[in-house]
Image (cartoon, rainbow, N blue to C red; front, top):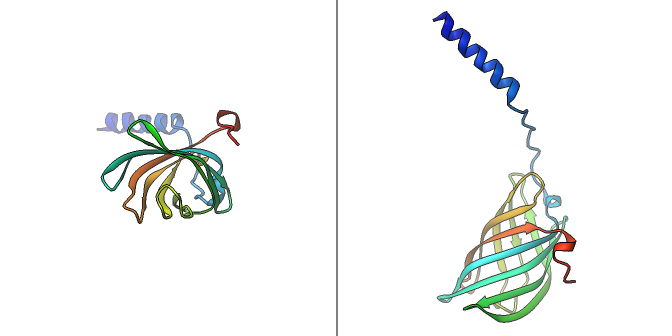
Length: 153
């Protein structure tokens, strides 16, 4: 019994010494989304049709965002020419969940609403779902990109 306790105690000391210290999570804020993100919306369904969307979303770190190079692909062909918008809004909650709302988009005829969660400590990726009043429903993935990776503006 004493030997078992000694072995367990020794393992605990080694475990504590080897495992890196975890920093306390300080929570998220609007400032975490700041910069350009490649946003991909694969397999979107709108009135029974399959679509793929992509765009470059630019967040200001203060609750506003814009979109450029917004494209829609339908049956492997570009269906809508690139669309841009300004005036999008977003809110990041302390638990790293977020909501984004675009203004009315020509492609779908109304605003698009995104509900997501920020992945990673620096806000480099956001994943979640989206919907609109025109029965648009899908998942999305947005990853921060460097200026040199997507310099279309």
